[in-house]
Amino acid sequence: MNKYSLIKELNIIPNTNRESLKKLSKIILTDQSLFESLVEISFDYDNDISLKAIATLEIVVEQRLDWIAYNLSYFTKNISKLSDENAIKSVSKICSLIAQEYTSKFDSPIKLILTHEQLSEIIETCFDWMLKDYKSNTKTNAMDTLFYIGKKIGWIHYEMKLIINKNISNESANYASKAKKVLDLIEKTTVA
Image (cartoon, rainbow, N blue to C red; front, side, top):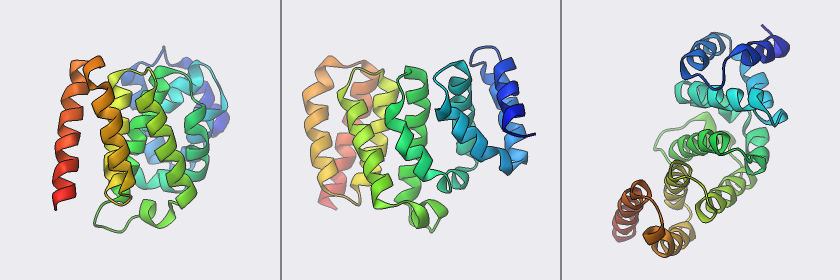
């Protein structure tokens, strides 16, 4: 399979049918050479194909986070350009996974390859997602991302607390619950 075959497969999938996307992700997981094409397709088109590609990308990255490390430059340059809520939700989840790996105790391709510029792009985009009118899943993934990165970059927690405290009363119950947990974790991290 090549990039054009992958586009054809994505085009056949009805909407963002999770089961069909899982089947396609299994094919990609058995052939890593398709991964770079998947990343490119995710951001090359502003249509249903890119939405399906981004949803598939999320599924693949959940299984093989190390694969995104070699595509971080392309990924981080494009995350702020997304406008579709579902695409942003999937990408925010991937950012959360990257941040967790970046702050883990163990060496990984993410830790070795992630540059200051790429990290800054993730931080800026996540703050943007927290401040704009997105659904709670996107905002809670952004919170997770920023919390983890904030373990290494102290000012992030301070800014997060300001945003959370300002917005918590206007947000959903899901957001409020996650926000309280994150504020508690920040407090514990600061004390430790």
